Image (cartoon, rainbow over all chains, first blue to last red):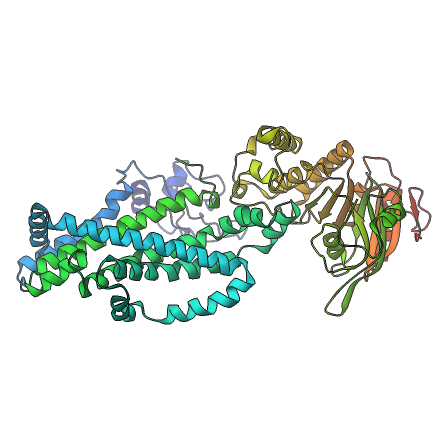
Length: 325
Length: 273
């Protein structure tokens, strides 16, 4: 028994409370007084580590993690890549086993092939670029409008009373329900798509920024007042910085929302863009192209998220005292 | 002198009435929803005088401080306070998104010397509270005592003629509080602002102030000058006598204390006119 315990301790497992190991006591590694009297050097037979000592106090060792032997540290990025790679492998395996027909599910290899072909033809770049441009334009407009409205409603009671009910009502209208109307208004060019994307970005940015402005700690506003900040100074130095975390939450939602609206807008009425590409692929049963476009969306999503996280690291450094890299 | 709100009297007449005081209130009333918190409060604080205001919670201490600080315009009566005032709150109330140094000069207009002069003055204030090394730190990285020292520096850099302290050490541990008392005394001795310190802590009040006021139900019921040499010995007879007198005024059983409440050698207390 004792030998097994000692061995396991050497391997580097955490010592479990209650396992006072006589062997280690004999080796002199235990703090004096932690082992029950009479166990030092004694054989394992009949020794109950949890039995009361001379004073009637049952002594145990607190949980302790033994220092582990030098272990190869896998970088975090590498560890995070393992999951997606495993999914890809499984996907390929399932496909090559013929579980699905190639029309139902394209294998990763087929998707990569399709991507290569599209890239060689220049189709992928041009459509991706168009989609990116639409999303960027819509995002900029929508975020700007959302922030402007949030500031108006957040800072002025009049703004809130006049604008907020309208915005809340408009928010309840499903954006995609507007598509036919928007086509009548703006035709089938770029304007309706950018308009819809902007609208999709406006609401999450508005809601979150507005709530954040209203949630700024009144005590800080008051402190700013006593130390001589005027109204504009309060907005610039207290309210807007305080609302920044909420704005960034809104921005995250807006980034996701902009792509959703983009896809739908391009699938319904467009001659270009990733959504158009998916739609075309459907008419020709090119599942591989569909998957390819979806994979691009996934990658774009990850990139957008990384971007916002980087933004947060810089803009919200004060939250955890980050001193900059 | 600046009136916090347009006074009932012409300002010139009121200023004459104030007779060179740093703080002057007469018939100050403040009620919240029909509940009278301050009832005809008369108070004068001389320039450079350190006044501690004691009172149980809910007696209007903070309300008075907020009126004097210009944070509460809803009062009635006559109030005059200096133009340059600074408040230190119970919480440091630093802007978490600004580094320590920017917090110190927050809201100050750039002086004649421009930003460089402002920076130099702020660094000097940080030096006085012993935090020059933290000038570029984020407030979140400071301990409670350090943050409160930054709040003190932020108040000091304004060269206030009146410092309003709203239980500034209430949230600090006992050791830090003692050190802060020493720091505050040094700073006040050097800059000589009039000080109104709102506190619960009787020992803190006697230890620091030239004069201790007790606020009960919106009126000052006790006004005691503290005539003890500094540094003050908290175990001394006069100190204890004043302590028990203040505690009984606050409605707390004082227990056994040395000396008698009425004729301790170090105090001179009585209702003021």
